[in-house]
Amino acid sequence: MRSSNPVFSRRGFSRDNGMAGFNAQPQAGGAAVGTNPYAQGTVTGNPYATNPYAPTTAPVDGGQPTRSGAMTIDDVVSRTAMTLGTVVVTAALAWMLLPVDENNLGKSYGIAIGAALVAFVLAMVQSFKAKPVPALILAYAAFEGVFLGVISNAVSTYISPGVVAQAVLGTMAVFAGVLVAYKMRWIRVNRRFYGFVIGAAIGFMLLMAVNLLVALIGGGDGLGLRSGGLGILFGVIGIILGACFLALDFKQVEDGITYGAPRREAWFAAFGLTMTLVWIYLEMLRVLSILQGDD
Image (cartoon, rainbow, N blue to C red; front, side, top):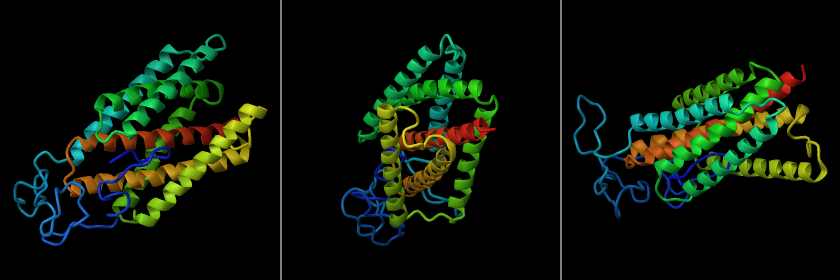
């Protein structure tokens, strides 16, 4: 499994060679060739028959069987709490230690941009690794937190003191809304959904890159996609894309638990969720900043 977010794509728990296993459901005693990426060899009966992370004890009172060394929802929650906690702590430290007044704004911005570049490189390295490296993921979270702390402090100082809290609450609301919609099956994550989201995200990122390039060459706001009415529109589109990637994250967590992914894969899940939530927060912060800056 690799990180699913607007910048990086990953192979999901239920997909072999990309998209093969979308919509594949485990069948107790049924054929499962190509559906369980954690099974070893060709399985013609129980999909967990040769999987070292398969259930090892029988269900108790109709409950779920326990798995030896397999990922659980508690693993995902604890790893995600560690990565998000690292982001929050380093963001708070950056807010306090890197002032954004007129005398220090340039220096603080420079540190923030440097931290963002380091975070990007660390995320790229982890995204192309076959196994999660907790140190890399936590380092990414730390540098991302420095960037977010400076940017949030600047927005709070020069636009509105309450905009950061509003962006955090908005991000939490998006997360809760997508989780409820996913659990209620109002969102169906299938091959078509995956293809649409990835295609839309690539188009969105290319358009933002062109806007940045035009801004660097011609000055100003480039194509005007980061301010005014267009800025709000594309900010909302970015939030919607982030919500779609949350649904993909939830699908991959669900599949990992269903198919008995090894416990280390919980770090990949935490990595993807953290990146997606950071994306949503930044887009939420931008939209609210434009709205309140026009008041």
